Length: 238
Image 1 (cartoon, one colour):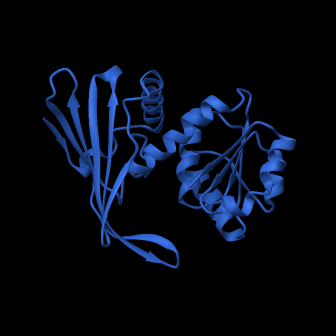
Image 2: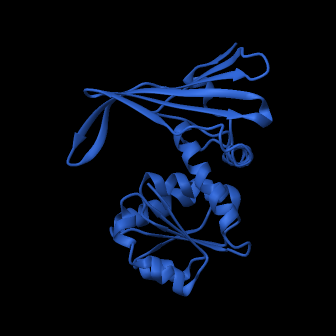
Image 3: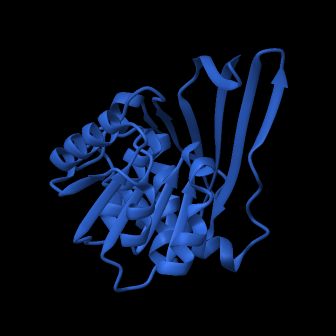
């Protein structure tokens, strides 16, 4: 059985490969909606055990992801005092034998392209990219980000893997944050990213709008602006 440690997982996948793998899994799930279960969480005091089973018929594999966490809540925000690596166990559906155990760090990671990105963030951003690829118009050229935090960063990396945008704009209510985001991500992805001072301007200029994290509640009123001026795609990530 193959065993991969966290340091051995880094650099194995490019974002585009992750998006393609998630798209294939969704195709399988569409054909066999009964094969997958939702994530389960078992609580005991501050401890939590998360488990996610799944089957991929096209690759003749089944698997289970398990993670243990110690939770803390501060100011209404869920924090983690301690977290185990992500533990993925894969089985061959023809023989029932285990074929691999993969441990991925929740603290660090890297894509094959050399972009710093944790494995868990790679998966989450890939899901959004698949949805965007199928839901957006084929002539979409401008991407707007509402928010400049971790989710905006991760999802910009994923969106960059599925489309050649001629323009990317980012809005944050804090000037320093949006300018820093634009500078850092422009250098990382070799893209021209423009900080925008008004959310309405970012939305009205965009073909695809990504509202990330808690920013969505602040930008909820702009959903109608996006639908009225550019009825193409408004996406939210938490």
